[in-house]
Length: 607
Image (cartoon, rainbow, N blue to C red; front, side):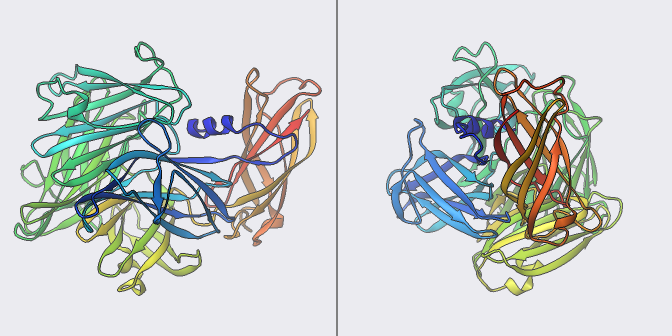
């Protein structure tokens, strides 16, 4: 169970015996901004929701200020209020505009969903009056982090901001370290203390004002949670974080992730663009790579075009090449600017490491109008998936959503696309075939031409038998913002009821029945009638919990939208007889034939 979810579960786990509980799912955004002069600089936050479940869901929205106190705002002009409840029917999409009449104010947002989470997107808009200057997409956090690393940069007109939030009920302490870009040694440190539900957002130049080179530096920043204000040992329940790059008046979100001990040997950036007329629209892609591997990393960046052929780019002004060798030194940042000629070209990048090593890779897409920077958008590497879901909202002549696909397979790959309208009904279907090592980048209005010249609001699901990588970008005017892609499809199965039909003490065993709804009717199929899932049994703090897979006969659900499944769970690590009268809590979720997980439900039991 994820830490943020576990925290909220523990705070709400006063079960009535025998009562079915739908485990709440928290989704957090560590940075939002609202307010300002409506005739000058101001901020608006857009909250976009798609309920991709086979049942309704309710989201409880909470906003917090820097001090951790509630942050009153206007939801679609109503308020001020710091909380709001929103109910979404199955498949429904909705956009909520969050504003504030007053000074520019930053904070963070927590949405607690029951019985299932929804695809959730946050867009921050920076405006001058009603004119959009820049917008960014803030990645959702389903979990807290205990440590993270990111590449930060400052220069004339360039800075990096770091936003942190504490979702805990006690103080949180973060040890922030700036690493020397020349030696890889610690250059400076500071401790950030956040009260319960507290938040902070500071530029790098404010975090480390006494570093002589802080106004012109490119360095790794690491953030580690510690157990006290002295930061002599690790501890705590984790924090939320994101970063923002400010280049002139263009903001770019820099997603951050929990520090992995290592990672995949092959990393994919499914979109790269460079080149174009010097007096017109032209682009560069800037790669930022950082590692804490003690000996550093030497890796290869291979670039491919739409047809899977090698695509040459100039790296930092060098002769064009499609395969580029890169070195990333320990606790330092490697920055590579990919540029081209007078023709705008796009493709994707495969990074191949010598092994499964720690590497943080992100790309910044820069769009220029002649020599002037018009927009930036930043993305982390994209995992390989077989399905995904994107919120799409566009206005004719004003905004659109683009999707980029990379096929890392050695054979052609077909990707199925389904367009859903605002109420969740299928509006259109499309299939695209991407060549081996190929690439495709299209606007939604190109993938579904019937949307051209219209205002649209809904979602697009992606699915394939083979794994692919994808990213989504929102284009408003000439401003780009990254959109999250949920790692699941539209109609996930929903558990609506749970009953225990029998309990055995030796060996420990629980027989159960679950009522399910699955609008895709693919929880079980004629070719795969077994329904898989995971079950947990929690005996309490002094004993702990055990979990394991369950396989359930789903024959009676083949081709059906709803029904009841019966199964049995034997905790794999519970040996011997469970003492008579022992109380516990039984949890379960199931997975459909395409890998979509249901909601997580629980029921108190007694052996």
